[in-house]
Amino acid sequence: MNFLIYLIIFIKFCIILCIFRHLYYVSKGKKDSSDDKDVVHKKEQLEFVFTILMAILLIYIFNPRSTNYTDLDTETRFLFYVFGFILIILADWTKFFGDSIIINAFKNNDRIRLK
Image 1 (cartoon, rainbow, N blue to C red):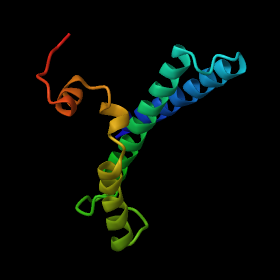
Image 2 (image 1 turned 90 degrees about the horizontal axis):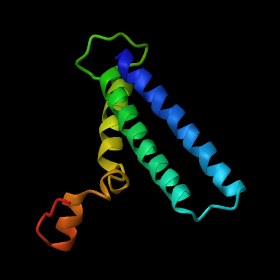
Image 3 (image 1 turned 180 degrees about the vertical axis):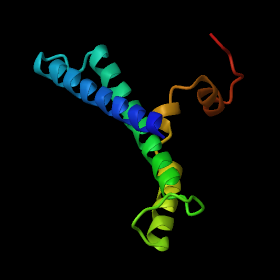
Image 4 (image 1 turned 90 degrees about the vertical axis):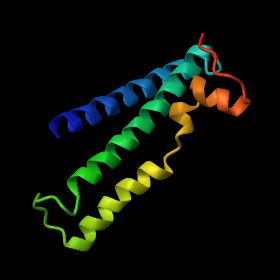
């Protein structure tokens, strides 16, 4: 549990670093450079991972079958538990798997060719 929380904090810190790096590129007039596009792409991937990890944390903390004590009633715990699953299901998976070789092969109906 502590590892998950530390991982979430680390990923949020990396997102903040990506934001500052993007702002640096914008201030230098290199907004359309490939380096800036890479930074923005990595930031979007990190935000996706952050959302998924937060959803997993919600599922873990508010699991109706767990014996963890919280001051919430049963319905509220269940709603937070279900909300974790909803976040995972409705997440924009293309931000994370959009550049995948396997997914691109299925899109193009080609054989999977590894480079």
